[in-house]
Length: 361
Picture (cartoon, rainbow, N blue to C red):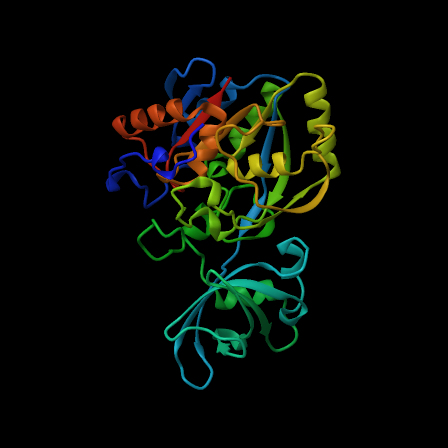
């Protein structure tokens, strides 16, 4: 087991970082890699139903990306300010807090300003929305209270004043097409600042084929935070701290997965966010999945004892990222890096709008 950041590096040509989605979601390529043998095959995402079997449980994250990027100006000075709305300060799912008035919850935001942000600073945004900085939390995070004229929910105000926060490696401004393509077709629970991108490949036709195959689908919610893009700065991975992300597991999902595990059926996680949710919500004593809300700072890397996940569908991730480490925990570091080298050589498209990998048994 490696605990060094540099052991998760690989060469990636910039030209293979997908800047646009394909014309159709399920036209992506799919690389399958076996955990037991390390061998791989090159397929199409539309082949996925034929690779799963009756009784498998497919788990998706129904988080919906919100226009969380706010561009404004400091009251009085006019200095430029950018806030990224990350999560409510209170212990509730983001979707619940968004449905309330702007003042009903304090929010944790990432902030950037031309001359810094201090407690007491006020920032004005479009559509009558303003913000008061209450506390600097360190690491660029602030506790903020928003204000707005009565009558609209905070989510409605963000729709008017905010922008879709595309990942930093997409080097263009979001366009009208991103509003639809940077969401999964099953996105329901508003509150993420990034899409659970392994799910972007699915279409209703894919789900129909999976259902015909006898594959059961259940949902969890994890509000994807900006930590998914932040670089790991410590060479010694034991020193790395994950940013908290809020998740929710329903009673129905917990019951379905617990029954499947008891019967020896496979759990297929769609994306790293699902993996972190399921493994975080597992009772350490019984090994069963627990329903309810929680915050996860789980750092999954080689040596991690998986309790829930058997197969993983995921996109191709950044070098030296915690996401590559998570894949390595399931597949093995050497096999993961070998598969990534093959994907680069074969011309796969990487990151959010890129192609997919299925880690099999």
